[in-house]
Length: 223
Image 1 (cartoon, rainbow, N blue to C red):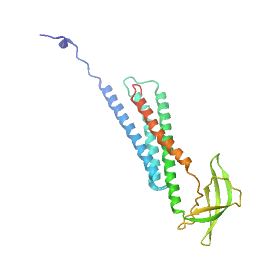
Image 2 (cartoon, rainbow, N blue to C red):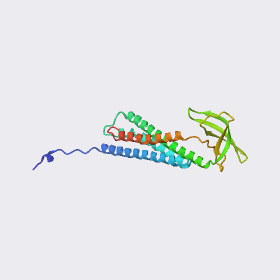
Image 3 (cartoon, rainbow, N blue to C red):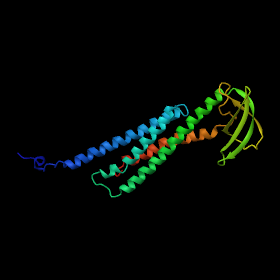
C-alpha cells in the first residue's frame, strides 16, 4: 500500500560546493568570534598591567591584531553565503565601522584605566614634598597642559616634564611631590583624575554596546 508520504519525491542533497561553502562560512564565523574574544582579553590585559611593561605592550599588540583579523573576516562571510551578495564592499564598510567603534571604546577603556592605575601608583610612592620651579609650559589642547619642573633633592638638581592643571609662567614656584627613592622621576602635581574616570566610564559602556550592535548584525540573515 502506497501512502502520500511515499509518493513525495526525495529531497535532493545539496551539492558538495554548497556544503563546503557552508562549512567555510561557519569556520569564518567561529574565527571572527574568537578574534573579538581575543581582542577583549588583550584589552583587559593592557588595562590591568603595569604602565609600559611587557604585558602592557603585548596586550595592545594582541588586541590590535585580533581586531584586524575580525574586521577582515566581515566581507568574507557574506561572500560565502548561499546567495553571495554583490555588496561585499558594503559588508566590508560595515565591518570596518563596527571594528573602529569597538576598538575605539575598548582602547579608551584600556588606556584610561591603565593610566589611572599608573597615576595611583605614582601618588602612593610620591611621599616627599619639595618646591619646584616651572621652566616652561605649553598647551596641546583646551584641557592638556604640560610643564617642565626643576627641583633639588639631596643636593642634586632634577628636571622633568609633567601634566599640569594650570599653565604657569616661567619662574613660578609650585609644591610638588616626588618619590624619595627615585627623585629623578616626574613629580606629582596633585591634579584631579576625573578626565580619566570619564574615559573609563565611556569605554566601559561603549564596548559592550558596540559588541551588541555587531552581534545583532552578525546574526541577521544578510550579515
